[in-house]
Length: 603
Ligand code: HEM
Image 1 (cartoon, rainbow, N blue to C red):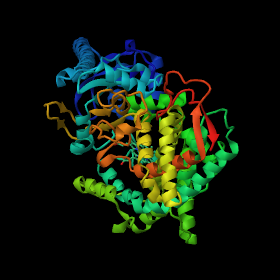
Image 2 (tube, rainbow, N blue to C red):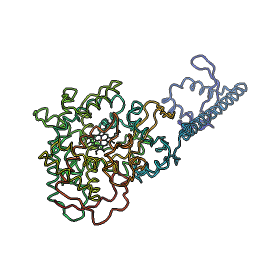
Image 3 (cartoon, rainbow, N blue to C red):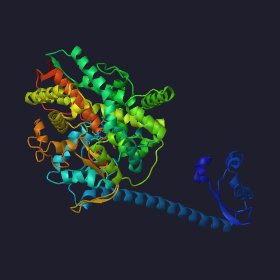
Image 4 (cartoon, protein in one colour):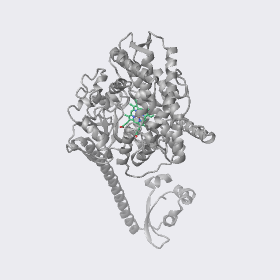
């Protein structure tokens, strides 16, 4: 208060006064000079009128010089009390600071003993950056960071590491991986990402939803991906594949080194925009199409985006306080507006198309997507079984434009890069493995002769091509790690308990390349899928109730594109050999650094 009035402690004088309520009190008063008196009247009094009765009385004491010896000794004792109070206050501050420091130290010790307490081996961190500093700052791709941890934790079935300041458990053993995916799914329902769909509407999509909200949305969206609905969408896919082949026939410089990446991206964006948004994106052979540019922007990790992501991981409260956004508002609006316009157009004109958007419209209007029993196959029944087993908890999400926009958004981002990179990697691997390529082509030609066209049924019979796709996804899983958070404490059969809230990582890429489960892991050997694969050792699409919802859509799309490519072109090694394959650090998904050169010939 004194400092606020612009007066120093030296101006204090203590007076004993009669106050208005009839009590005799000692009051420290700030009037030792005429100037202060003046200040009291002009400045302090009008502003702090609550203190006025006491101060007025004190002032008059001062003016009338009523202080005597007795009063002085009372003042001295008051000053001592006052000083005593100040000393206790200082002690309180010191005490509070000590308690705070002790709490931080306690928390830190608890954090650093997290794995010792669990009796689990772990990779030591560099505080506060965690066990893989290069990975945290995206100097290495997550695949490389997790592979380092995977090998450091050998031969343990699981072990710990610190993801920045957060303890995480890596599950290395296929049997335990399977438990997390399926048997113990009820303990590992969520992915644990930090999201806030109220502030960032596009974060309300299936991949990021949690608990009961996720269950609700999964149950609503699953019918969209049944085999019956997929067959309807197949016609749209087929049109896109025809345009893809026609484009390559026109533009590929046959016999020269090429890189298929851009062309594969153009094709898969065309498919997903046609099937998910019901729009012709004209992205085949057009790297400047609006949707191609948008998709690339969403996946590009600028330094600013990395800083925002790391801030959100380490200090989510700061991220919220600064009202940061991972995705610019205009990028959010772009998708929501497409969905809004498409849905309204269909509603007002009655226009209809076999695509996700029509099914989302049905979901908005009727609350569910109708599926006839004959539209389901074995996988659909499996999905329904998963839902029945885990449909505890009820939550209803209103299907407004923002929510539907978020689902369409996840179909786009989850659907284009994953499928395009698989086509891209497979064409390269076939160029390096001519015998496999011939075998796959022979199968395509044989079944084409049998079915007369690339029908949905024909694709189902392409067994060897399927193995080639499986082997490509083993070597280059687009999603190189799956993650969950332990939503309910879980004890594994060996007695290890995973505490609630702990992040759990499944290092898909590293397990796929572990010779224990895949002999000669670096080699492209599609035949290995003829025999059974160790359960839990192969999961490019994840597994269990939270398995990729677009798995069959992706498999059909990739098979169709590959069958048509194999029929029309031959893939040959490029003029330079690709050295050791490394991955782009600033990429969400697995993306090879420096491209994959090969040549193409027309058959
Ligand atoms: C080769 C192509 C693809 C691969 C390798 C892939 C891989 C994955 C993986 C690993 C997951 C996490 C599964 C888990 O945690 O257990 C996932 C989830 C998901 N994928 Fe895919 N995906 C592909 C294509 C697609 C397509 C085409 C779509 C949509 C059209 C799609 C939509 C989704 C969605 C919505 C989820 C979240 C599912 C949930 O949380 O319930 N994916 N995908």
